[in-house]
Each structure stands twice: as C-alpha cells, then as structure tokens.
Image (cartoon, rainbow, N blue to C red; front, top):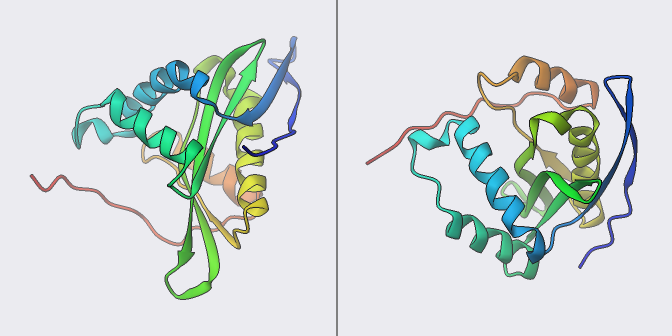
Length: 171
C-alpha cells in the first residue's frame, strides 16, 4: 500500500470550507468506486462501445490495488464520503524502454465536489506517478465534456497536446 499524505482545506463557492483527503483506494471503497465508475462510463461516451459491467470494473480495480497490474487507484474523501476517484497505469515507453510512462485511466468527481477535489486528485495522480518512477505523464479530456476548459487546466500545468484519440466499435 502506498502512503498518500495529501489532503487539505478547499474553499467551495467562497462560502463553505470543506476538508478533502486524497488517499490510496482500498477494497472497502469498491461500492462508491463502482457507482462513480458507472457515472463516468455514461459521461465518457464509452456507453456506445459496450455496457457498463460492475464486475469488470471491480476486477480491474482489485488488480490495480493488489497487483498484478502496474498501476494505482486514488480516491478523494470529504467528511467521510468518497467523492472522487482517479487511476494511473504505468508502462515502459515504446520508443525508449529505459523511460516509464503513466497514463491516467480515469479521473472523476461527483458533480458537487468537482471544485477543488478534482485538482487535488490530479495533483496526487501526478505525484504518485512520479514516486513510482514515471518520466512522462499522459492525461486526456473527454470530447464534448468541457474539453476546452480541461485543456486550459492542463496547459496551465505544463501539458501540451500531442494527439487526438478516436474510437470506433468494431462489432
């Protein structure tokens, strides 16, 4: 299990102070992860590629928490409730096997918790990738889902666009 120390106080709507803690996900978080995973599946446009399967998501998360998948899962917690999640997959870069990349697998916060909790999740996603030896971090913005605003967030953090990804169902 990794030690993720981050958390902090975030001002939401300039009127309420909310405590948010980002930590490594555990099996106990699975019910909330599955609910948010299904919400993310709907928003992501992947619903056209296939139905959401809770067992598949659970098996993927367990493989990332316990191995054998080289990755990690983080959750954001506010007042004892899991309000967001993210995950990263680590791999050698194809063009230079001495370099390691990390790709964001998903990054989702419940709508009422997106201000602040989302930023903390991304901060810890990048930090954990670095702690695990990643030289490069890759992330994405969902087409049509505030992708312009997300692109500006990424660019302010030093990211640059390198490709557009397209998807098509084959059967």
